[in-house]
Image 1: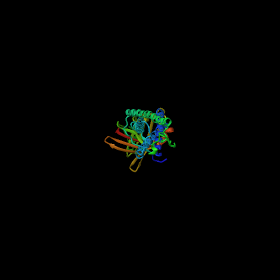
Image 2 (image 1 turned 45 degrees about the horizontal axis):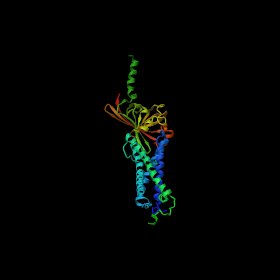
Image 3 (image 1 turned 90 degrees about the vertical axis):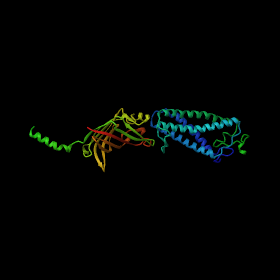
Image 4 (image 1 turned 90 degrees about the horizontal axis):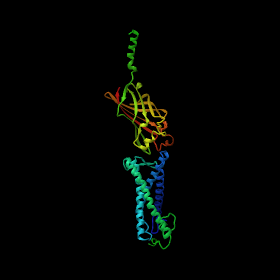
Length: 193
Length: 184
């Protein structure tokens, strides 16, 4: 498996970004929902600090991922009905939007609340907005709802991948799986390009 | 008046300047008592809204100068609701048990041109020595008095226990007071 994507499947760099961001944003989202109602304690401070550090990491990974996506050439679409192709690409754009908006809204929420923002106790990042208690509550809600919306789009994204894998028996899922072998079947047209 | 009483009065009159106290001042509104600490790599400022100070000071009579300050700890404000509701709690000032902090000078000394007030700070049931830098500027009938010093919060158990991690909450609290004084 090469670093770059080829005509048949995604390269290992694209796969790494895909799965690490997926794991990070889902884990950090559930973590965030669970921590929100904790009573004040040092544990709460530590858990929030980790949530913020992981969120910033996802934001940085997203920037790298986007840069890589622009440099790397995505494998051509697996043959499928046109509406499915459009739906798939729309879903991808939405997911990219959420991956960018969720950490950013958290950063803005944190700024409006007047909290410091530290990355794993190593360095501090500036506030994106001045302290404002009322707006801070709104930003907190937005931050949380963006995650719910992401889950909704994710159901479509993952559902479609599973549908392609189990019903259409094509390579849509396999070409993004870390260790899967590509099916040499009727549906993979890309490999002959 | 007997001769004896008269001569005693005379001796006392002569001695008076030598044992005279430093001038007493009252603290005027507009005076501030603040502190600066550090949370997650970022400093924050706070202030006490209620405190009293008895100030006797004369740069030429340091031996008889004295600061006596009492701080109402429940009036600490740092501009953040979470922090301000945590500060009076048992983990930090524990104001239910120790409502006030008290600082009283024990001696003043000069270090170069800097006057330093040595004193004892009682905070959260612990009494320990704390020194403050003193800048006193006579002004008309009164004076301005600026003091700064550093208090190690863990010496007094402020934010001990679960909050003792100084990589999250800094160990040093810088105390800054700006007093507007009027002669008594």
